[in-house]
Length: 258
Image (cartoon, rainbow, N blue to C red):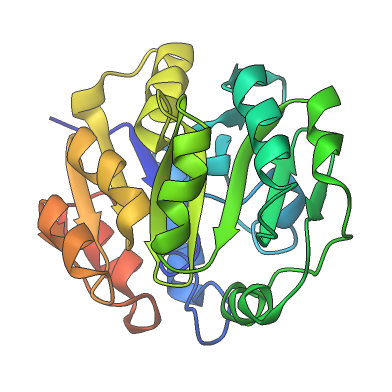
């Protein structure tokens, strides 16, 4: 069956984490696939405010941001899945007692509860800006799609127990993503496929970390990068090379997409 849509994670998949750049071979591969009529999508934990200028050279037909909770193309918003009001209120109450470092990803703004050593470690790894520090209660007046919670797994339970309609999707050991329990990149993929009239069997996804496991096991063909975590590799159908070793290009060549 020919593949009609490809979903790409960003950090550690399209980009090399050591340089934060997309290899020229990957950019070339995306353009070649798109020229053959394949739809190209970004599926990332990042919010829209953290995508440019990295993505401006690639021909994306749509963006699945905040791990699939906010999806759009150049015409309209296709899918929103916000954290429920009760969970937001519970989080605000929790943070009156526990001084946790969090990044709030809302529809209108990004802000931290605090900037500490854990935040700075993640900032260096992913090369994102240090956004302003604001009161957690700012989220009560707007859609909140995701939280980045900085720290080890001991903080996951504390937050998710207070937010029963949410789940933790850990990316690496220094931070996790907190999203609605009914969400994930695979849910955003379903919304995009419904919009474009493409079947799940006609899809490919590339990823490298735990927050990619859902989509790697969901699509027609899941491809993990050579530098992916063991868990992501186990969820994939095929393992390609690392980003800097032309992993995207090599895999699309192997499966005759380009």
